[in-house]
Length: 235
Image (cartoon, rainbow, N blue to C red; front, side, top):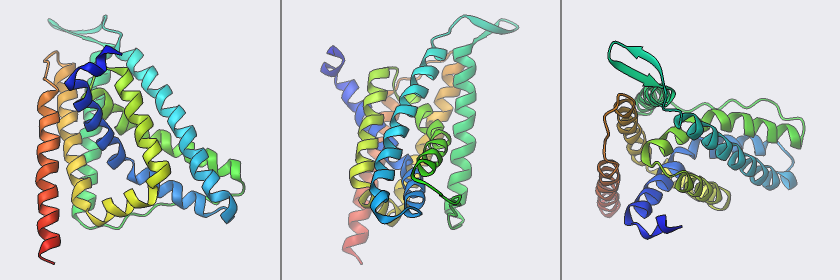
């Protein structure tokens, strides 16, 4: 546990937790829609049960992907350039984040309304299954973000746990805040582009200090908080 005596570990944990919460807004919306299809007395249990299952799935995905990333033996050679499974996963993950975040930013900037389609829910167990399956899809960007921000698996798991607990307790408040201030989501998606580029560069055997990303996140967030305060003061 000596990792928590290092200031960098706390900065990484705060940054990752913030990103996990903001990127989890779509998940919160989906869970609310699915739970809303159930009788009122089952809705809270569906939200908590779905998020609990989602937490387990995310930790399992983290464990599997970080294990694959540990495979550093070369499996592909291009001239003098060798690529391992770790490099291939990092590059593929970086490309995925670039494409997904760019499309999401375009979607939000163009002002398209989000349409969440939910299949008919016939039972409580059916709702949980829907939540878990969709959470696996929503999880990929958050897991790749975790891998891009820190190399410590313990910090990844703690950040995911904190974000899920926040979703359980403050789902409506967090969702309302981010929807009221959409620039927060744009910031998070912009950081995903930065993280995606960093993953590609790491996969190409060039190390990028994580401190650059931590500074960018908190500096941009501080500026946005000042902007929010200024807009509120002048409305």
